[in-house]
Amino acid sequence: MAIVKKNILGTFQGSLSNIVFRERNGKVVAYLKPAKQKVSKSKAALIARNKFSLAVALAKEINADETLSFIWSQAKVKATNSYQKLIKINSKLADSFSLSTKNIITPVGIPLDNVVLQLNNNFLEIVIDFEKLDKDLLKADKLFCLIHLWKKKENSISITKMDFVVKLFKFDLQNLDKNTNLNFLIDIKNLGNYRFNNGIALLALTNSNTNKNKLIWSSTLGKKFI
Image (tube, rainbow, N blue to C red):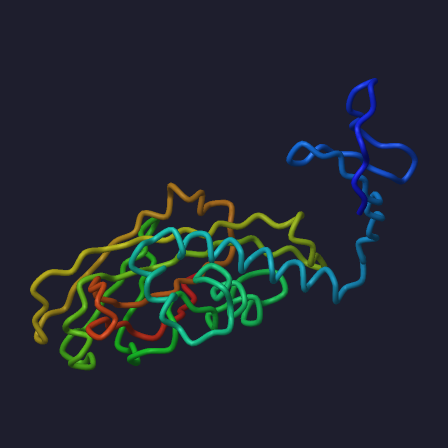
């Protein structure tokens, strides 16, 4: 990069051969035009790009929620922020053409079990048996469920040829009783479920306390329902 002095004809901006001129802070700066990178079309490169794109879609949904974003800010993952932490972890856990039940919407936390998923027509029913939950999870006041739908095409690994949905749903929990079963319904018709032949749900319980010493969350429970 070099600084170019102005002349009486004014300031030149633009490009000349492989040199680009731009004005910055009142000075004209010249630098070499970046070389065009060749995009690899190998199977391994396509799979890596697929996984990254899927992880980005997940991270955008999760990081947009204030509670989950704060929880990820506390996670011990080497990354600059919650969004980057989500991408770093989940790109490794995704399949080549979709997210998997190994993907996570919360860092490792209190184990979450005894959750049943049932698909009835266009509704996904979530049934939680709170009697069998870890007692610390009875302090939770939110249920999160990330729905991922996709259409798997034979012999296709390109994300540009895939049709998929990633959508986060949130339910408020109040006055949980350990002897209570709670049912939650998600209408997946609005997600265009008729287009897809595969579906998974990633679930987690949390509270919404912004005091990190009182913050609780479950590990993510992944289940396939289509």
